Amino acid sequence: MNIQQGLESIKKMIEDAITNNGEAGKKAVINSSQTINVLHEVVKSDLILKGVNSNLIKPAQGLSSPEIQLAGFLKFKTQDVCVFPNHLQPLPETINFNGLHTGKPDPYGELFSEHVLTINLRSQLSSLAKNKDTMFERTYAEPLNLHRRLPKMVLGEVYLLSARELDSNKVKLKNVSYKPVSQKIAKSLEEYIYGFSALNSRNTQGDDFFKYERVALLIVDFSQNPLKIYESVSDLKNDGLLPQSSNCSLSNLIYTGFIDDLLSMYDRRFGTGKLS
Image (cartoon, rainbow, N blue to C red):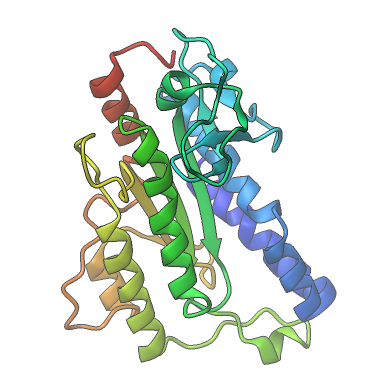
C-alpha cells in the first residue's frame, strides 16, 4: 500500500461513516485508531521497500500491537513504529535518574534503545485550529524526552492534516460536504508549516534535542477525487490554502523522501546494514 492508496482508504472510511451514521459516525472513526493505523501500514511497507528487514519492525506488518515503550529522560513513551537493530540485543536495566519512572525496569536498556529507529504518526482530521497549542507542545516534548537520554536516536514524525474541513451541518444530515477555503484556514495551515519546520531536520546528535531527524507533514485535500497531496507551497497558494504573501516552505517537510532521509541518517550514525 503506497501513500496515495492509504490516504484514499482513510477518505473512504470517513465518508462511509458519515453516510451511514452522520456526525456520530465521523467522530467515531476519526477518534478511533482505524485511520491512523492505515498510515502505520504505509510506513511499514515503505520501510520494507527500502530494504528494512520486516522481522525487525515492531509492531509487525499488519498488526497494531504490541507497541514498544522506550524510556526517555523524563518518562517512558509508547512508540508507533519501531525498527530494532540487527546487531544488538536488549540489555535490561533499572531507571536510576530523577524522572517520573525512577526505579522502573527498562527492558531494552540505553544502548539498544538508542539504536532503535522510531517513527510516530499523528493526524488532525477535524478543525485545524482545534487544540493546536497543546499539539505543538506535545510534539516538541516527545523528541526532547527521548533525545535527552538517547542523543543519537533517529526519530521521525508523520503528521496528517486535512486541508479542507467537513461541513458539520451537512454531515449531521449524513451528507459528505466540505467547507469552502477561508482565510482562517489558510492562516492556520501556514502556522502548522512554520511550526513543523522549526521541529524538523535534526542533523547533529549533540544538540537540538527537541527536533526530529525528519518530519513529514501530509497536507491533503480529501474533498477532491482522487484526493490531492500537497507537496509545494505554490500549489497551496494556487488553491487558496496559504496566504499569497506567505514565506513558509515545505522544503524537507513532504512525505516523498521521508523514509530515505531517515535511513540515510541512521546509516551515518550507526553504520550500514544494521536494519536489513
